[in-house]
Length: 134
Image (cartoon, rainbow, N blue to C red; front, side):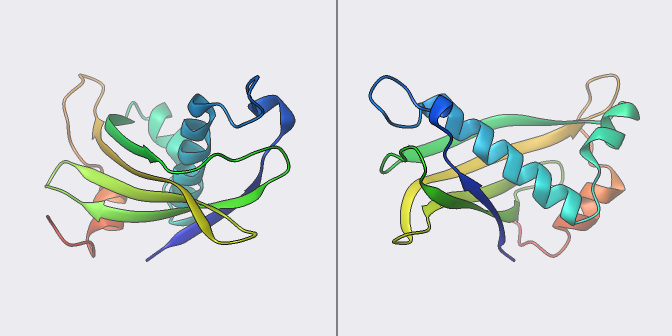
């Protein structure tokens, strides 16, 4: 299943070269992941209040092209189950005007309990149940 979130580049997200700063792309990716979780019944904030923290343990990002101010784009999110305790999100940033892929990413995560031990709460386990293990 592919999930998409729409965005538009704001001027302050760009650097002196007039392109989106590389660090801003991480914000886009994270926001899309949070929207994906919420749309699928996983409340990120509620989990944190319950001392369950979803954590990123690895990010792989391939920058293809640069976005500029006023570009409209979307971020796609596809869940992937890696193991009993690890999951990934395959993501892409795509400019709407020409459907050009600007960035591709794979963000790997897990969740930890209040003692910092990895485990997958039922909400996350259910979300990734239908995803194939690598």
